[in-house]
Image (tube, rainbow, N blue to C red):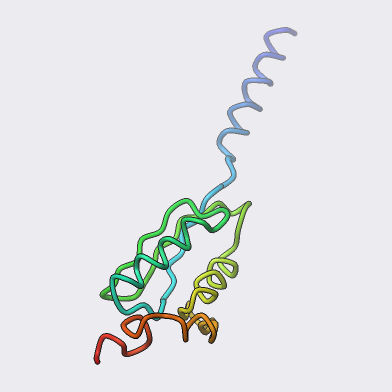
Length: 113
């Protein structure tokens, strides 16, 4: 009987570990970033965003990869945080006031001037 109990407990423990819940996710967001200053500003904002583990923006494409804890934040909150500092984030437009406060080089087409 004791051997049977040990086998059942071991089986339950193994099955529980096999069904481990995913705790993090990585998303890619298209931003309206233009330059290295944009990269620094967006990555800094992500560093202070609750639940964000890491972020990396590629200036050439304007895409940011964000790794986050799914229990702490959502893609929508991350997009809103990017918008709140003045940049478009996928289909979320930049906060107008924040956008107007960006340096000229960080505004859309700013690197073309």
